[in-house]
Image (cartoon, rainbow, N blue to C red; front, side):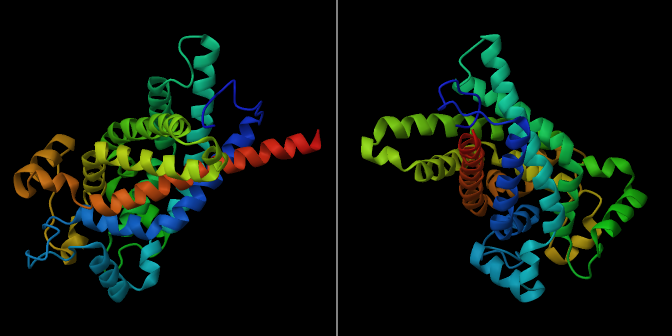
Length: 318
């Protein structure tokens, strides 16, 4: 069970074990879905339409983009910025899941509402993810810069990126895109946690008794559904975040096609709507849905797996 639940088979694990389970679950998941993430970022940053009919469009489909990135940059390009992403994973997963468990337990002990309620999971999921985002946002900016740079490379190493960005753009560069990020992650994570819990209850109601024995399949299926629903509902905010994170980095992106400068969240949304139409808000949605389905199902699966592992190890020792 994700979140505090008094009826969850007496599961009793420490906050440290919760943090470890959260870290490892996100770390393993990021390693598996990094190629889709790189393709998604390339789609989001492209001004031209994602269509074969546009002769200036560098990318127009997942397979075509994968082939072109592989041909031009080699297989390592699909894990470009992977080290900062994994640094992000370790801190992000630990803070997010530990905060969520503590917040849902706080709600239960305060006897305000049922800790398993949809709205409780939505609010606690959103708040815990905002805390995690504040903790690791500078690393996310570094990851986006690594994935977005073309050839010749502007940043050779992680240390070079940190030094160059700090010297040329100041310390606030590491929090570029923070406002749309927080606006985007609160509902996205809130929906992830709340829909995951609701879909699990729905699964148990729909499935016959023998089908309920396969808990791993249930966690993967419900996590996948929660990821797709959450990403679809909040995708435009994710696109704005990526566009704003490469602000001030436009001169090295001319090889990708047209570039734009944005003054802020509202200006970004206005320009995208005016120049790219409403469909511009959903550029890269398909690879994002694939990524969301895989990443959300894997994260919840591995988190529950490690929490149960720690629980059974404690039972065996006692």
